[in-house]
Amino acid sequence: LITSFILNFKLLLSFEKKNRNHVSLKKNIIALYLIKVSKWFTLVMPIIVLFYKECGLDLADIFILKSIYSIAMVSLEIPTGYLADVWGRRNCLIAGCIFCFLGFSNYSISDTFTAFFLSEVLLGFGQSLVSGADSALLYDTMLHYKKEDEYLKYEGRVTMIGNFSEAFAGIFSGLLAVYSLRLPFYVQSGIAFIGIPAAIALTEHAAKTRIKNSFANIVQIIRYSLFTNKELCYNIMFSGIIGAATLTMAWFVQPLLIELDTPTTWFGIIWTILNLTVGISALYSDKLDQRLGSMKMYTLILFFITGGYIAVAFNVSYIGLVCLFFFYIVRGFATPILKGYINQITFSEMRATVLSIRNFVIRLMFAAMAPLVGWLHDLYSLSIALQATAVIIFVPGLFFLILQYRYKPKEPSV
Image 1: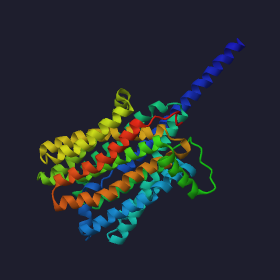
Image 2: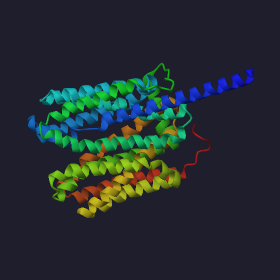
Image 3: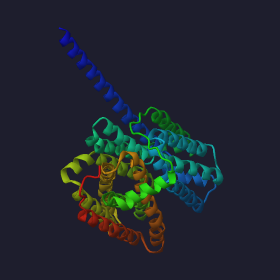
């Protein structure tokens, strides 16, 4: 009788522990979902140019502000990723959400270039603090509960939620802007605030890295990621190239719609549908990866991404718009899959830094490529600009794809 009681008591404790673990796991996942929504439910994007013009800014001022944002984000991309490893992913997410809240709050009460300058810096810093730390915390959570094989599924869901948020925000933005172009900024500040309590609610499972020389350690991680570990280097570079390609195409959407004389009322609807396409595609990324395997996925992603550019370039028509939707399908599953590959071969104590190196490569390549393709668009045509981008993406993409085919690690990286 005593033995039976002890066994039943142990089973009860085991069940309660399992239940607590399940609740803790779900809490982290839901909190990360909310942080994603607070970042991606961007009510201000569809009307921000109109808002700037109402405040007296011209197009040159607008591009300067967007450059400030990119510079602020890229300059801190790797240091903040490293900070997430040594200070904690949760702490970085809290700080990043606070910066984003302050940035949008400042926008909502400002009407000068100088004030907008400050907002862009705050938003750039906030994005850098969140970037990489969210994916690293998700992977560490799945690893802690021995569910790392489900990481890709949840990363796909996080990506889906982000794109769904961005898609539906476009619809609500237009409705709010009917009353006032400033109203979307007030609401955006409230949405950004949601990320702060969500980040505070997170539980971190990765041990913080203890170091003596921060700069030397950052250099060491960069050297390891881009030179020592060839497999990781090839994955980061390939993922960075594809990320830059999908980001650049996002900026070609509106020029394509303008070329097609699309009514203004359809811009938001098409933007919404494109982002829904990405979200749905991301949701099934894990199943596609399981079916094809990594090397087939690499090949498919590269050729479909560059093929999408070529297809749109030679069909600047509504046929090209259909091709664009296929491009966005590939974009949807490419992001979580390529980030998942990097996570699988990265040590936990440097994971956020490595993911930030990937984001840095994306932004750096985009910053170098964007002025050239923009100049080609203005001087020649949209078709020429798309063709040039396809070449710029395909050549280095193929190079790193071949390197990955040839590389055969002698032992597992982790």
